[in-house]
Length: 341
Ligand SMILES: NC(=O)C1=CN([C@@H]2O[C@H](COP(=O)(O)OP(=O)(O)OC[C@H]3O[C@@H](n4cnc5c(N)ncnc54)[C@H](OP(=O)(O)O)[C@@H]3O)[C@@H](O)[C@H]2O)C=CC1
Ligand SMILES: O=C(CO)COP(=O)(O)O
Image: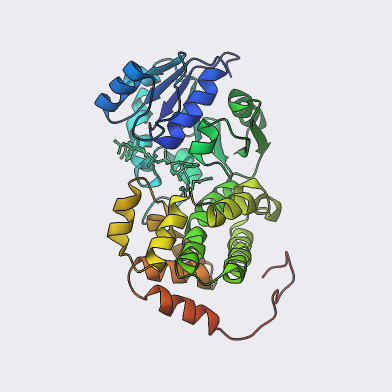
């Protein structure tokens, strides 16, 4: 692993731009690639990402590269921040262009649509033999860009690589922790997007603060049950990548997934709501994959399933909430807190 990394960030939306800015401010030679060459040229000229983070002044050390091969040439760390639906295709595109020394990190939250495969599984399959790390945790791009205090976590089986990524991003107002539970960290970041829709729907329907807290807590329970079934460590899910991001996204109005839920709860149709948000809303594809994984492990996750059904228009938000409240009475933890569930 090189001591002086060269970073290529792929994906010039809100989060890619914010992370590239952190690294460039730390003196890391950083190139930002995006699929929109005109937008990149405008960023280079104005030092602003006008569409996604207009208030952030982009540092002088950040370069903009519309050509993927040029962006990857000599890059020793490639950080992927495209939406989950574009992740597999992005990997396929970079495979023939990567520097032999390049290792891979990603900050995308979600699964491969249609298969429920984790993003680290795609990386292992398409880019075997390279160190791989996920960056996740409660971090609205806009707050990070505004220099507001934030803490994330970087998980990799390769502890030195996790540490290298954490150091690359670390800043006075940006703490990056490390860990080794890639699956747990990915699961928390993906699932909280689905659960944020549930609390958003309840808030959109003005069901009150008790409903919100109940949904967050029972949503956390769903995250733990699926996590344990998949082999995640419960403490990962109780940390920044799970509970931390769940609380942020279920309560913070900057969350696009929460805003989608609020709109649905107010009776706005899904297409109109997503169009109004105008950015990636990962729950729209992730809800299917959470339910796919739950079904595979014979788990009943009523909140996640309800969100999926509402997103598909199979039930209205009112019917979905009614169904949740009508479930049978039972112990809060039928098989113990961290038991087999
Ligand atoms: N924003 C945040 O606060 C955080 C986001 N994340 C995660 O980061 C990921 C990216 O989200 P975010 O940056 O917020 O999304 P944005 O909506 O802000 O930007 C999405 C970016 O992805 C680009 N894009 C879309 N489709 C493709 C594609 N097929 N190939 C290449 N680029 C594509 C868009 O390009 P174009 O403009 O041309 O459409 C745009 O630059 C998501 O998984 C999200 O969950 C994680 C933590 C925080
Ligand atoms: O992941 C995020 C914060 O950690 C961003 O959440 P949204 O995608 O819901 O805006």
